[in-house]
Image (cartoon, rainbow, N blue to C red):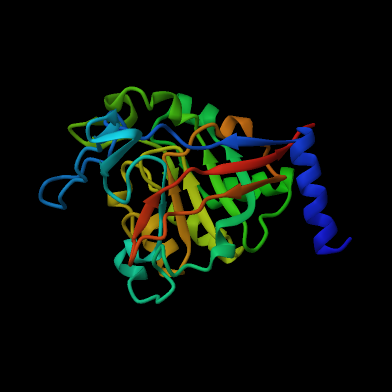
Length: 263
C-alpha cells in the first residue's frame, strides 16, 4: 500500500468511527494543579491566569478573546530537552526546533494502576518493563512509553494530586534503570499522569530526577499530567503531542491526543 493510500485509509476509518480520537489532556485553567518546589531549590510556576480582553462589549463588539499568563510546564505539558541542564546544548532541543515528525509516534502504555492504588510511591523498574514486553511485545525505536497510574483521578484536588507531606511529594514514577532501559530500546519519550515525569521522591535517586536527567541528556522528551490512559490499549495506538512553537521554548502545554482502533 502506498503512502497516499495509507493516508486515504486513515481518513476513511477516522470518518467511519473505526478509529477513536482519545483526549489525553486535563483542563487548563486557574485551578489546574501546578508543581510545588522547595523554596531553596527553585521559584514555582505562577498560577494560571485567564484575563478577558473583550466579549461582545465596548472593548470588542463582535468578538470574544482572552490573554493568558501561564508557565511552559503547566497542566498537561511537553518537556523539551532544553528544560534540563543535561539537554541544554542540543540545537534541536527547543519546542520551536524539534523536528515536527517527532510529535506523532506509536505509544506503549504500561498499566501500573493496581500497584499505585496500593502504594503511591510505586516505582516502575526495568524488570517490570521487560515483563510487560514479554506479554505485549517489544518497545520499538521511536515509540513513546507511558506509565498508566490513573493518577489523573486526583486532578480536581490539588492536595491529593501533589500528595505531599513533611517528607515531600509522594507519587509514582520510573526508576533509573527503567529510563536507561527504554532509552536503550530507542524510545522517543516517557510520559506519566502525575505532575511531572519523575516520581515524587526522585530527588533522592542517583542521578536525581532520572526521567528529566537521562531523557533530556539523550535529546528525548517527556509528557506530564496526562489523562485518560485507561482508554488506551497496551499497544496499537498513535500518540499526537505537539507543543506550541515557542521561541527557545523549554516546554509547552499540549492537547495530547491518541488514535485508537476500535476492537
